[in-house]
Length: 310
Ligand code: DON
Image (cartoon, rainbow, N blue to C red):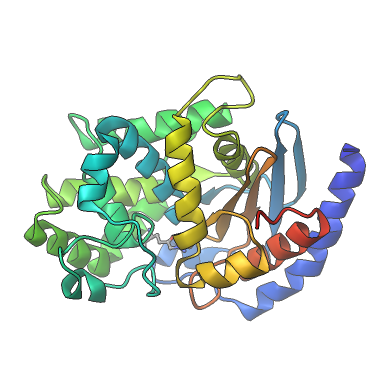
């Protein structure tokens, strides 16, 4: 692939997709996120030899939000094994919004349907081991720093505090999980870990590298090191297809056809098995919490470069 030509193609598609941003709104239930300019749009692609292609705001830091749920799941699976994890969180899509509480009570046993919705990710955070919240967070940060090669990846304190102050719904989910026996440890500590890992700050380029590690079945293509087992990568990619875009996952699978995970700061991590990782940043969201311009850009790119896996 000619890099200059590929970068030009990315810029052309980015410009085409950027018009969609006007149809969305930045997240405001975490007040700090409402400060973003909704018209930004950046994309990075990491190829299987580590080459990076980029266009637009690919170096602009943003918080992972729900994209971090993939990496907390990787850590929880590596530390506890599949049996322990899936006794406490299910493997089924919900068809409900990411912060919905309704099925927690109506489904028996009372465990979250999957680890991508907030309730499921809070349950996963509860399984991450360590002597303190910081030690548990470091397990996730170490993995992200290793794959991206950026030792400075950390938490955006303003976004973390903003979510912590306003997270009545997530607190309700967590205390319900405590009551059902899904959360074993200290609820406020687990919530603190969850808010912190959601507020980890990255760029689209770093997200592309993270997506490539999944595409390479757990191998960091920069160093050739295995960073997590292939079986764990397989589980994560499957969740990305079935639940990664929440109650728009079916539509996304039809229209784009790439395993992907979104976050309310406007990020999307996509992973094309064996071929590439893609990071997108566009903070204007649709009503389901996915980046409007980001989804459009991935649809255009998937069509142009024939990336769909189905
Ligand atoms: O818990 C929350 O609501 C946020 N920290 C993360 C939600 C999120 O990113 C949903 N994604 N589209």
